[in-house]
Length: 439
Image 1 (cartoon, rainbow, N blue to C red):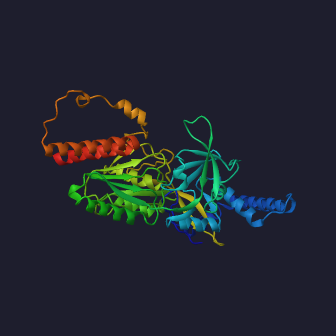
Image 2: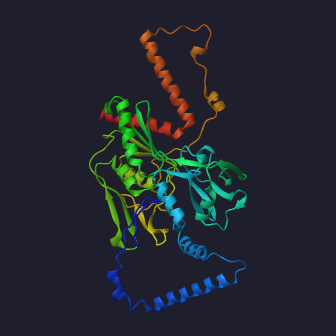
Image 3: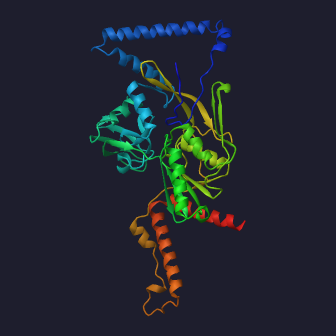
């Protein structure tokens, strides 16, 4: 059976265990256990035959077997599962950055579907779904009793068709319905833009295009700024990024590190661990770097954030991350399906396992939006509002400079109302730049 490592939500890979060297000395010791296994397999066969023969309706043998396999895997943890051929094909398509659906990453928690994060510029994001939301019903039917794969299958459907999700959200007293129209999801993994003299790099997922797009966007914005000497710093925005491919997470972290470990993975067999190290070269050329994270930043995002934090290369701002520190290996099966099996935990360079803990930001800034009325209240009267005031004695050049500064401050105030975490990050970048220039 061939195996290949595809870090879907987990963002990591594991090697194949070489079992042959251990078989001979363990045979005699494991005979009682082997007998128990065979007895249980006989029990499974008996139950299977009775269901086929006596269930009230005729059952599909293949579906019974697949359900049994999936039940075995989902009993282990929320991220291990069976992927039928169609789901396996869909997953491989998703890593290439285009697929059909709602544009939402989900996991299972306490029998309900939990939103890890909506993906930027997708129906789910436009409908206002948030990281941490729980989906309790699909088209009015409870999700209790469904496996994660079953729920995901129901959320898929023809482009243009509608689905109604019932949402339970922390801080909202009653459940509410959200109607979403399915669409073809085309993900641009990375976008770049200038905010003044700061390059903002938004990474939405870690697929095959992430690092090439990030490198291309970064260089284009540095050129637009007139060269690296005119760039104050960089913001790497990993908010609501649910993860993806390990090699892309390593590449993004390596883009800002010259040396040292990026991440390590450790499974049940210590000899099967892997370690990934940075190579020389920093795309940001040592300029200040801030990383934005929140509760929707999971897995591969946490690998990048943890590496940059442990090496003191970046300041982390935002809220605690999701806490997805386990590694899944995709193992293809005969017949075109596969199993997604948790095979290891990953560790940050300092040896931290963030499984179920998450990464704490260096500066906690909870996201919020200021209402226009609240902004109005914050305005105060000044000399310019008084009748009969003396006019300013500024020269034309001074007046022009004053107006440019006023526009910059107004833009900053607007950004602070729309995206407090990003505005805070820009303030920190400017402060770090001033500190660097004075050293």
